[in-house]
Length: 114
Length: 110
Image (cartoon, rainbow over all chains, first blue to last red; front, side, top):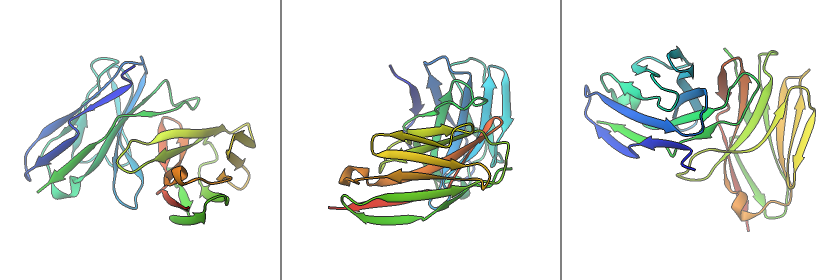
């Protein structure tokens, strides 16, 4: 089982560049989400989706866009990268968050914006 | 939104001793409380979870207790081993969102 697959694993961007972080899951999970992890701040929710065609903002959505055209894929777009977006990004999926189910994480993307 | 506080931020214990990590939350509607372990350079992985209608859950050397009235829950690791060294995160599920604590770096000294 592949689980949650994230690409790329590492990325360096220049300020102002845009890019898309890819996330795919093969567990038929309805719920998918993106987090950023910064030292001393834990994991903070950027955007999430409860199903295809439905997305919503999390705690720190500014500077990021998402879409969910299929159940399997949930890409995260950085529109105009800034040094403050240097972080480790994790995609996660779960069956549904409503009744509390395990979140499965991708392997993470370490992004550096210079 | 939900406010999750986790303590301590770092914890060192001798091998064989117990470790306790505590989290508090603010939203009484929260209903699911997982704990994740993250080894260096790896993804977070679930180690134990508890739902709001349960007060305690145990899985071998790991246990979680929940006090809904006081809005806090704790992770207990007994007979610690060097492979328990990692960062541990508590999380709280409120509605459609997970809120994570800031993490506890646990070091088990052989």
